Image (cartoon, rainbow, N blue to C red; front, side, top):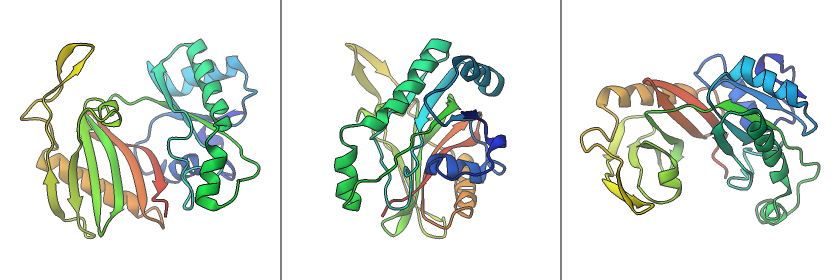
Length: 250
């Protein structure tokens, strides 16, 4: 079945990723989206939903397994998350690939390591979101040692994932007052034997004004959850978008 968020009567069994976004959808900017709850979807319905709801050049398909992004277990990095420019065939293939990632060979090992048992009745759902082209993006942890941590970068997050650059780090105390702002600049990297300059020395980090706006919104976001949060966020046209929220797994 393919549904958008306005049609959800119950969020049971849709996974933490969908559940947590559902909770804040009226209060924060979030990407346009719909959910696919089983892999026997209708291709025409899939593309009709994409065109009518998302209607963007780029999308991202994310997993939302029934136990994923919960307080006790995260499943981070175990399932596929795929971003691409829209075409009907690519979208179909990517949705199927995310559904298939529930067959990950490391899943049993991970569950037994964290929970000391395997989870029964696994159910995968796929979240199809508009892919936001950002100015600044990355993560926020409402609990980091004894403080709070905002990490961010300009350009693409893949540079961070691939360990090409380091993120800027803004550390806040529990009252959201700034403790430190570590500005990491790496001017260039080698990619396909070319020197690609990726940072502007004077414009690599948040201005004081935009930093204050971001902190205010992240503080407001925390009030909607009764647990410490790990947030993926992005800023487009200097508006904050919340991409996903999960508990900081203990």
